[in-house]
Length: 221
Image (cartoon, rainbow, N blue to C red; front, side, top):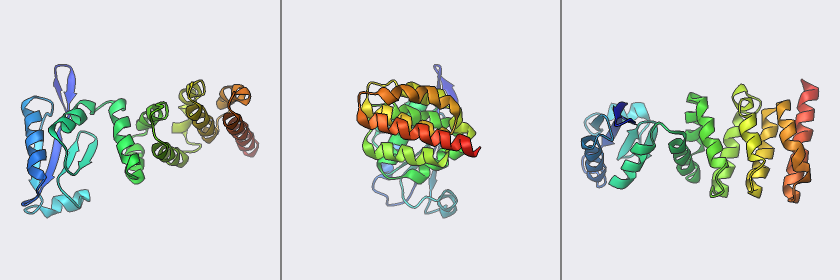
């Protein structure tokens, strides 16, 4: 990473192959970002010459670009690459990365990122708070959070989830109520009780189920 006008410019690794039709476009776009200072350093590897690099990274197709924390596969326009360079190092950027992965069914990749860095759970909560987040992505978020049920990392986010119970969006309130139960933390109770009087029957039902789950967890503790 390199500082450029107050913004941390990410480094990048690009894997290409001789004869790859889309590799020149990505290479040109990434090179231009280096010239603009939006990428700090670009390493390019031709996997025909160095197949061991692709094998070590588990890469099966090119072009493949690791741009900061993001792993981008396939053809990407110069403008797309510029957007990802700007997003690097931010929770909002990681949220968009998770959105793309979950929308494509890449749950395992999201889990791998979060297990390496638990702070990225905050990026998932940003997605959860967005009314534009699709059902497919919301289901993926749920699958990730299920993996951390009862963990210290999820308990640390009781208040963040609690704030989402006040959302104007029915789906967000319902999701927040469900995920609060996964924390298995008594601090979730004050956030859930008001939802027992929610205008939406579905939210009331989820809140009731979550409170029952928390009571059950407390009795087993």
